[in-house]
Length: 98
Image 1 (spheres, rainbow, N blue to C red):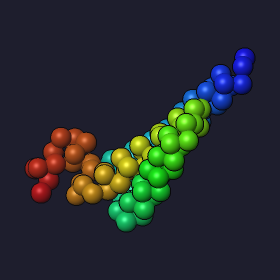
Image 2 (cartoon, one colour):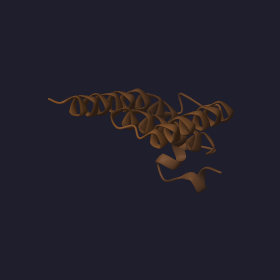
Image 3 (cartoon, rainbow, N blue to C red):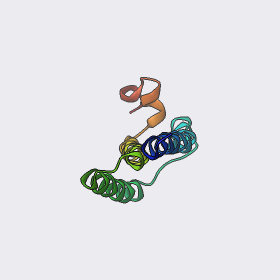
């Protein structure tokens, strides 16, 4: 296994583990057990996007997978935090919940 394939494999593993880290929090948001603070997730989204942009600009390969997955989920949670009722959206009842 060459070094490039090793870094790619590590990047895929870290992206998978990062995905596993966000899913329980998102499940709790949908179930109503967690309510994210919009301002905090906005700051984290900006920082993660800057990190992803810097990695893209530098030509990163394996580490880019982790950074982009992290930035994507962070932005997704920020967008979900803007919704008035995530549980209603999940069940297709957002407009009836108001």
